[in-house]
Length: 515
Image 1 (cartoon, helix red, strand yellow):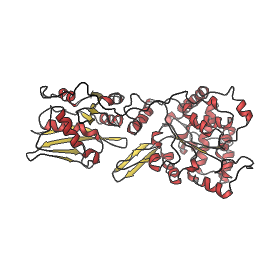
Image 2 (tube, helix red, strand yellow; image 1 turned 135 degrees about the vertical axis):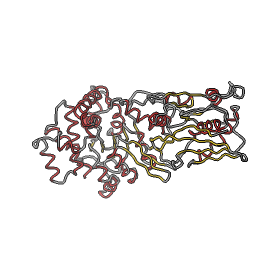
Image 3 (cartoon, one colour; image 1 turned 120 degrees about the vertical axis):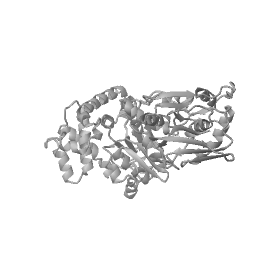
Image 4 (cartoon, helix red, strand yellow; image 1 turned 60 degrees about the vertical axis):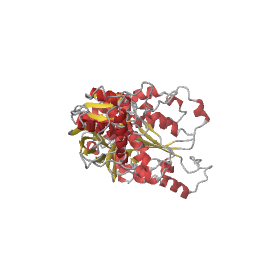
C-alpha cells in the first residue's frame, strides 16, 4: 500500500482551482480523516464514499485512511469531490491503477452510481486552462462538459464501470442491478411555452418604443415612469427580443453562471439568447446581488449577465438593494466578500427600472385624480437614490393610453423589424469601436470622447450649456454622448449631429421625475 493521488476542481465564484487529492492508508485502527478545509457537505462525503465503494465491490481499506485536499488553505465545499477522494483511496490500496492527471468531478450515490453536480462548465474550463483536459464526469453532466473546447471528457453512470476502466479486478467489481434506476438529477429549466413577446403588441407609446430601440442598440440602461396600464412591463419584456444572439465568448460566460445557479444544471447547449431576470420587489439583497452562507452564490444580477435585469415597481424595493446595484452598473462585475472567501461574478447587464408616477399611480399631466401629497411623492421616489438614477442612460415618462392608441395597433412594427435595425446599429458600433476593444456605445470610456470621438463644439453646444448650468453631472454628460452616438448609428450617420445630442439630452432629463 502506498500513496494515492487524484485531482478535482474547487470553484470560488466562477474561478476554478485545481485541487490535488492525496490518500494515505496507515497501520492503525479504522478511521477516515479528511483534511484541507472541507465544509460540512464535503465532510459528509466520507459515508457516501464508503457505501458507494462497498456496493461497487471495492470496499475501502479497514485501516486508517487519511485524505488531504491540496492546497489546504483553499476552502472547499460541495459533493463534487466525492469521486476524486474515492479514486485516490482505491489507488492507495492498489485496487486501481494510477489515474495520472485525470480530473474527477461527480457526486456518489450510496448504491454506487455517479450523480451530476452543478458548476461543471466552469470546473471543466478551469481544468482545461490548467493543462489537465482529461476529465471524468457523471453521465448527467456529459453534454455540459462537452461544451468546453479542448476538453477530453469521459462519463460513467456507475462506480463499477469507472473502476473497470481504471484497471480494477473484474472478478471483484459488482455492477448494479439493471432494474435499478438512478434518481432524477438536476435538469435545465424548460423553455417558456407560447409565442415570444412581440413589439407589435404594444399600443401607442411611440416615444417609448423608440427609446427601447435605442437602449437595445447601445446597451443602455432605461427607466420607465408611467401610470398603471401604460405598458411599462410590456416594453421591458420585449427588450431581450431586440437583442442579438450572444457570440461564443459571451455565451460561454452566461452558461457558466447558469451552471452554478440553483435553477439550472445539466445544460446541453450554450445559452445563446440574452437572459431576462425579473425578481419580485420583495427580493432581498442576497437574492439579487448574490451571497448566502459559505462561499457566495450568484444572484439575479449575475444571472442577467449579458442580458436584462428588470426591476418592476422599483421604488417598492428596499433602498439598500437598489444602491447595491450601483457598483456592478459601473464595473460590470460583482465582488462578494465573505468569511469563507471572496467570489467574483460577472454582472454586465442592462438595467430596466419601472415605476408609477406616485404611490397611488393615478397622477397624470394634470394630476386631478391623484390623492398623494408632495411629501408622499418625494418619499416614494426617495428610494431611488441620486447616484443610482445618475447611472440610468434613458429616463422616460409614459403617458396614459387613450382609446385612439388602442385602435391604432394595426401596422405597428414587430420585434423582427426593430431587431434588424438594432443589429445594423451594433455592427456599426463594432466597426467603429473594435480598434479600442469595445463593442457597444454604453461601454465607451470617457477618454475617447476627449480624443478620437470628440464632437465639434457646434454639435455639443446644448450639452455643454446643460453641464455649465449644473443640470448634468460629469457621468451624465458622458452618458448623453454615448446615447447620441447610438441614435446616430440607428439613423445610419457617421457621427452624431446636434439633433442626435438634443434627443439624447431629452431622454436624460425626465421632468416628471424631477417634479
